[in-house]
Length: 304
Image (tube, rainbow, N blue to C red; front, top):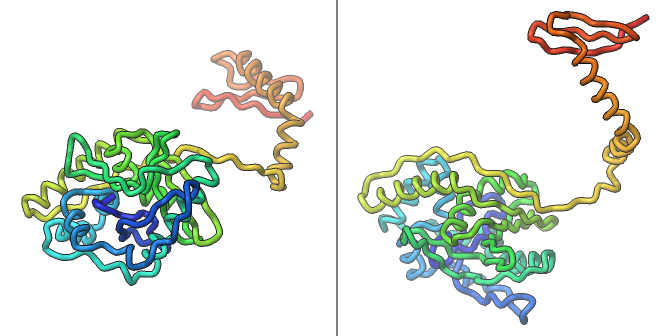
């Protein structure tokens, strides 16, 4: 994310921009913490200047957005030709920033892992113009922790895909192999997704960011780059489907007929092995085996 602070508890209704600043981030398990006052969530002049000095995680989202308009706007902001949009009056954005401490506390409660390094700025050792301001870091898992607050109607897979550039950017800059995306959906659901580092995706992202940064320095307007296919999140949840009727019926059938299914599969293998290469149809004992023009053998029952 962008230096010096790009609070990632944004996007309550799908917005991909965010605002943020330093605030009291005392861990919920280590003492009292207070909700940040709204006045503390905006970017000050020094913070805006620092944001122009490089490319952060939310910039990665824009660079791979495929939107010429958004990319040109970011390019103008990085060159100091215009100011970034003032998001301090946008309820959805500010609500996401304001609920980030709760998101973090809820993750710690649900997982048992503390979130540390909140607000720490990390810079890439190879490309100093790349940086990441961490929402947090989970030391026992070696994972960057990212907070989002989105609509209760948002599809989880789409939210994960939307922020994949930011997650992969932050992992690359921080030098770790996994990220945790902690999402509040409206006011009724919370989920956490584990994302593995994908070096091919990160290489494509680095090349796109390098081209964009070169345009910032040269003054040449950038062109939208095609986004690489996002990697799939790692499965991290366990669910109990005891009350699911279809699961119950299918589980009963699976348990009741598992042995029969294995015997049936073994019989099919044996029958097919008995049909010689020059035989188009073999039959007997109530079944037949037919060979298609492509060579596939189909076995089925036949009438008396």
